Amino acid sequence: MTVTEETAPSHYDRIGGASSVKAAVALFYDKVLADPELAGYFADVDMVEQRRHLALMLTVVLGGPNEYAGRGLAEAHQPLNIPVEHYVKVGEHLTTTLTELGVPADIITDVQVVLEKVQDQVVAAGTGA
Image (cartoon, rainbow, N blue to C red):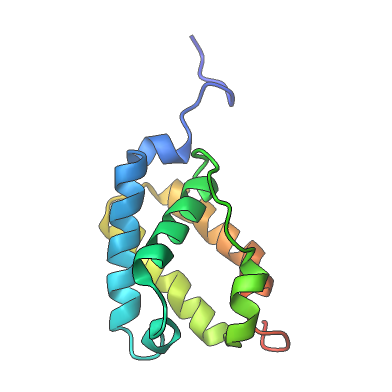
């Protein structure tokens, strides 16, 4: 039997599903909260809820079940006036996290493509590349 697009496992399944996504989110936020340039964005944030939201969004990005019902990226991030440099740092932390967890390179590349596509929704207007 040949593996086709329809029968190929999703990135979500390939990395191990929910438990792997949760591990990635935990390690990712450990890195972000330890970064003095980024930690301030989360000073007044319910991190349990924040981790849950990111796990749901990352699940969707990886082709897992879509159970995300939170605010859109722009609505959640535009009020924070995030400069492009900080967005890039967050992306680097995510890439490092996925690499450390042994996520295959093709999946990391696909996640980076998504990060590029949504940058304008997250970065403050006028600070994009």
